[in-house]
Length: 423
Image (tube, rainbow, N blue to C red; front, side, top):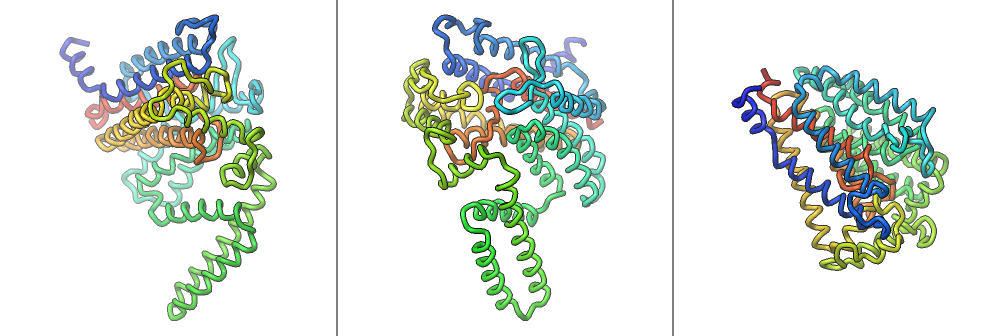
């Protein structure tokens, strides 16, 4: 590559996004250090500790990111099916040779390192989904395309659920935003989705037959008000039957599909159960840790809840507790602000892409990161159930950091060569 080409290449890279990524990685590294500090090995680079290992993960993530930026962007398009198949095979392999940790058989042991294929499943799904939907971009959105696209998403979801890892499986459903952006899911379907969520919560709070009776009363009043318009009466009847069936299915799934600990977590969030020393222990200690940080926090390495390990999984799923306790409300707002800036930047990158593949992939990246960001922080402050997913670029773990880094840097590679891809 000549000097002029090299200058143009690096000039097209979105360095703001890379800066935000690097800041998040460093914030994560320091807070992992605070969360699991070992007085006998206090150094940030001590490889006998998780924070020492995280430094290696960050260093290798930088190398991975740089390598992605110098690979021809078209390679990732042509390799999408291969990457998807390889990850699917890994998801099958983990069910056979995987190591069970915390009730989930989600890791393949590779010496001292444990590979989590489900993290790379999101990357593979985003690539293949972008490839398939982009081939349909010149056609009107139709049900067949939506169903095939949904199948691409649901295959890895089914395999991840067999582990079982509910949190990772749910993250794939964030890709609904991709279907919405591309016109396969309209506003009416989103409203039905919102109604489904509302009915799900109500079905858990109210007796199912009482709830169906209330819907029948509402439907009857609407039918009376619209009695002169027969087509609306039919629609009201169909909607009532669908809602009643859905409520009965929710009750069945809650009692016979969800695991006891999953039901308990939902009950705690909904206020149906108070178990501060049992199932609610993690959430209770999380709230205490974050609340104790008050406005400016207790200071780096001075968090008592953090130091004495009151919150389990504090370097992974509950890393935000350390930030809340040691950096306070101000530090938490700064972190949230960095994430929101990154997400808005990704939407901006998505909209300026010149190919359907790059745009669809970009929205897939933004959707996955938003889901992880919202759910992880939401579960630590008690607004969503505890489902156990990492905070991107912050939580400890090589698989998590590398998969999110690859996901992001492939997008940056598409963006840097958007003129060439269009040609």
